Length: 282
Ligand code: OAD
Image 1 (cartoon, protein in one colour):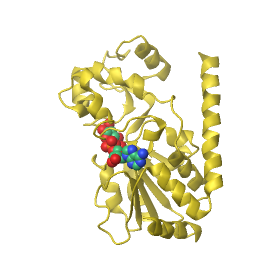
Image 2 (tube, protein in one colour):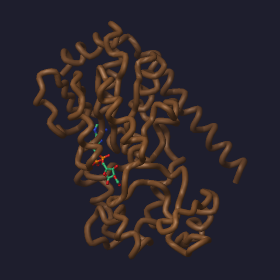
Image 3 (cartoon, protein in one colour):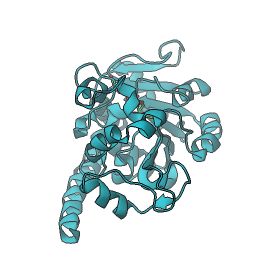
């Protein structure tokens, strides 16, 4: 609740939280208009009946992709980044960076809104990969994103120019390894963390879901529902609320409201700018 958030704000204001590690999932982007995965009515997995999947997660399963790549490619168009504006929560991450206290953001999301909000690449770990590059799932040959997009836009499935294997964006599917950077930075950052913020994730998917267990500092949860083992530690702060609302409250307690809102307002202008650029290119 509020009094606990005041404690978190005090840590930030007193300079006692200088290595903030943030661990996030799809729930931080729902207010941008991107559905999460597991929310009962609105989540992506509840709305995939048109794909006739054996089970919802199959759409991101590497074995299923080999047999029926159309399922993923039907969705890929909708999931493709570039259409959405960062949320207030994303801007709060950029604000932590500006204050010099952000150590890392571990994100399971592939919408790149963290970066669009102003968090630099070196502060982000894309734990479930991204659409930034694409590779053949058999021989590993890269396919340029412009090439892949053109094939997708023509309603076709991309195949490798070298071996005819299936090509897929480098987002991590079930049955695939997470990027090496995740395994390099997770142990170091969880040890160095002096405040952890977990937000918008059901903590159902491993190994990401283990991250909050690996820290010994205070942990804050901003999520609509209780997840993981939050509440078990005396120092846990659990805020069961919309994460935009929650960080606005935290920012107010820190005296950062005007700065946060100004940063968020700027993302609207960036978005308009991006659209104008896109039109000029296309
Ligand atoms: P989930 O859909 O599993 O969980 C989203 C969580 O965010 C849920 O607990 C929601 O209650 C919460 N939530 C939704 N809107 C919120 C809001 N406005 N404020 C606060 N909380 C909110 O999404 P993830 O945990 O990200 O992986 O899912 C993890 C992975 O499963 C994804 O990266 C994806 C998926 O399959 C792969 O595809 C490999």
